Length: 439
Ligand code: NAD
Image (tube, rainbow, N blue to C red; front, side, top):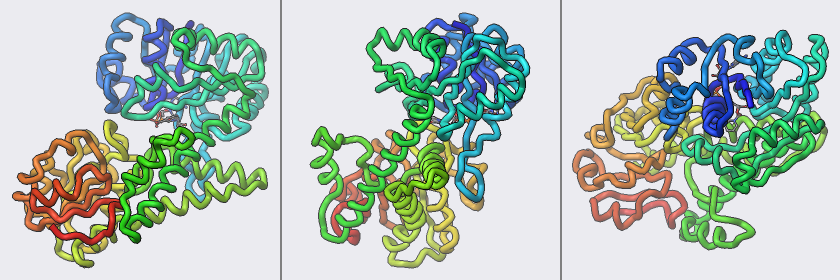
């Protein structure tokens, strides 16, 4: 199949590279000239495990190309995917669809009858209808519009794309279903479940999935608070409930609150859809509030571990990306944490294995260290914010020696209290018994 991918970000680039790897002919289009020039020169715009090799292999085979020229990129394509960003609109939290509609208007000038236009971006219910309306307004006929929301996770994007739990295709016409069935045939042969639904249902399914995962995270974070009050261990509670098949073990890790480019904006967008429809979604609304409060409270947690005052204290922060194995800083919990530390008068030195460049764009007034040990030098407290694997293998004793104080605030429960105590550190985890402990 010939495929055009409009939008070459985390989703567009991974999807485009994987489709090319399935044997399709893919052209990735983006308005960002620097990004496309970089890709044409073999430079990845994002950090994602395995992506560089996959892109290079398929570009070398001539199956994956990159361009800023939309008309040229979509020429001859049987399917045109839209994978541009849909960030939260400032002020009301509605999904900002301006990039989607701009792409559709550009596309309308050149798209041929018989083409299937597929939204891979996460878009609110009814966006497919609106795309159809815009195409009609521009005089386009014979084009089918489908929804194929993407569920990949950054950090494991290629594996997720190639071994998805399911593929959701929302379409109103057989032609669209046929084309998407053909595109995903290699996965279908691998027994990946493909769920065909109506277009509006597919659009909503993506929001419902992300909202549900956000609820799970906020639920365990509230249980962690209760554990701290009643001297119970949230790690064991999570395991105890997660082994129940009806609940499942994933997304039950207590921590500093969820961030990233999806959950925060998608929960807000779902609430906007619900408002417009006049149907309250109390659980999601509460989840958003619980998570906002949680992220905002992390600096106070660090202050508490240091006896309440942060003025003149030096804090080392390990991990800045919103989760491990990505350089994505969008809505990362490290941002409100660090801002809160600075507001309280602390100095911050931070280290992240890959997100430094992205972090420098959004964090001001802090030092960026080249490794964890340099970050810890002379620190009064060390805070683990992102659970990169390399932090699991750190030499805690060496870290403790480099520090001035001896406080470890482990917001991801990477370490045990005993291990920390052996290194001479007072340990403050999340939801692991009473908060105050001594080394
Ligand atoms: P991104 O910001 O990384 O990439 C979007 C790209 O679209 C950018 O490179 C931008 O330059 C380009 N773009 C914008 N307008 C354009 C236009 N008119 N023509 C061509 N290119 C244009 O975003 P992302 O993280 O890849 O997310 C894309 C969509 O996928 C969003 O709706 C998001 O919610 C959804 N999604 C993201 C993830 C994820 O993990 N990042 C997972 C599932 C779904």
